Length: 108
Image (cartoon, rainbow, N blue to C red; front, side, top):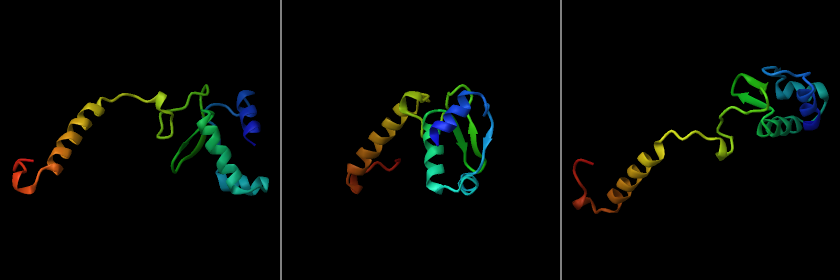
């Protein structure tokens, strides 16, 4: 099923932005198991062929480039500069938690 979906996208039958049918409806229409459709949609998203918007549906992706999602590989992330700040807070928290209550700073 994934190969068929990939083929129809590559041939331009399904164009960018096309909304795919809901998984349950497609499974009922094709008379196949729901998990087969779910697995196909998930794999197509991992390949960058489609993307899903929770509560909206699954859509054909433009040019096979997937949008930034929580499931995107780490090589496709954007550095927002929070790491250093988070590390400093974690270090402060670790020191605070390791300090006995009688010696803990009052302003923390």
